[in-house]
Image (cartoon, rainbow, N blue to C red; front, side, top):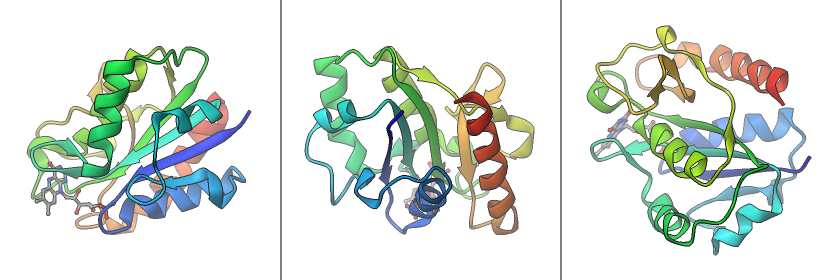
Length: 170
Ligand SMILES: Cc1cc2nc3c(=O)[nH]c(=O)nc-3n(C[C@H](O)[C@H](O)[C@H](O)COP(=O)(O)O)c2cc1C
């Protein structure tokens, strides 16, 4: 089971999650792909059975800009991702941007499950305070959101709890 971690980040907060995941799941640094710096082609996703996919949220609930072209390409080329397992993570701000808190996770979820991938790592939405989020799917949060602006003290525990969820589902 080969794991790849793909992350779009501006300030490095989402990379912090990526690095914790890499350490815990023993993922080589070459398999931690910074979307802005290391990503060239959607074929890179093909190398992995399990994809941990991260993005902070921008604009009004948008993915980090480094994800925009890959998502367009995936949605037009429609590679078959059935058989792949995906999980989503990313940073946001539930107070200033509570109208779209961590919505990038929901956008990634739509794209990758639309290609046939199986999503894991849903957690109770009750851990978060927000008005609206595309990450809320079927009454759960579709991955790990962290908020270093308002809830920094929860980050460590949120990451380790989520790792346990992933381990139980993989
Ligand atoms: C212009 C702007 C728009 C933002 N829009 C959102 C948003 O819609 N939803 C959200 O949860 N956070 C939003 N944020 C907060 C960022 O996602 C947050 O700062 C996050 O920690 C950045 O993580 P990164 O360091 O991984 O890029 C926004 C921040 C800025 C400056």
